[in-house]
Length: 281
Image 1 (cartoon, rainbow, N blue to C red):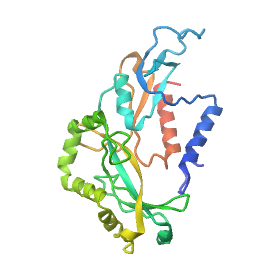
Image 2 (image 1 turned 45 degrees about the horizontal axis):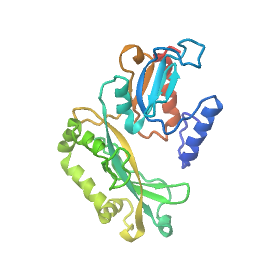
Image 3 (image 1 turned 90 degrees about the vertical axis):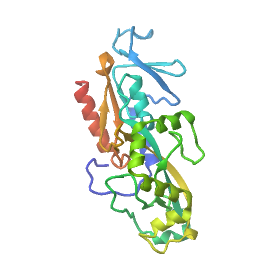
Image 4 (image 1 turned 120 degrees about the horizontal axis):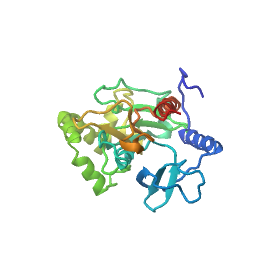
C-alpha cells in the first residue's frame, strides 16, 4: 500500500486496522484494551521489576490503579482527545463536541442505481456535511451521512445519552456560537435526521429516481469535532504536549482531519515525523 497513491478504492478498513495491530505486535508492541487512563505523570521511582533506573520515567495509570511505565507517550484519542490532553496538564482548547452521522442503505434490489462513489462539492463552512453514495465491500450502498449533535461521546443512537457528556457540550460557549451563527442550517439537519422523506429528498438531488421505498435506516458514526472557543471548526492538525517535565515526553494528537481512514498511512508518517522532532529521537 503506497503512501502517496493517486488511486483510491473500496477496502475493508476493519481488516486494515487488524493488520496494523498485527504489525505492531510483531514489532514487539503490546495492545491493552479496557484501559481507561486517569493519570499521567513523571515517575518518582522506577518500577519494582526494573533494573534500568528511570529508563522509563513516565507512568500512566488507569481507573483500576494499574500502571504502565514508558519513555514517551503518543495519544490519538479521537472523541476523548481533549480530556486525555487535560489529564497531562494541557489547555482545554480545542474542545471536542460529538456529532453523529446517520446513514441510510439502499435496498439490495436497488443497488444497481449506484455504480461508484458519488460525492457532492463540500460546503467549506461545514466540511463534514453533505450526503454521498458509498459502495461497500459487501455490495451494500450507504447513503449519507447527516450531522447532528450526539448526546453522548459514543452516542451512536438517538436514545444514547450521558448527562456528563451532554452538559460538557451544552455548556461550552464555542458550541453555542457555532449554533447561533448557523441556526437554520442546524435545524435543517435535525429535521432531516427525524424524517426519512427529508433525507431522501436530499439524495434525489443526485439520483432523482430514489424513493423512500428504496431505502432503509443504516448504521451511524460519531465524529470527534474539534471546536475553539469562538465557535470555529478546527479542520487542521493540532499537536500538544503540555507543560513541565512531562510535557517534553508527551505528544497529543488533538485533531486529525478527515479522511483519517483513507489517509491513515500518510497521517501516521506525519505523526512519526513530529515524534522524531519533538523527542529528538
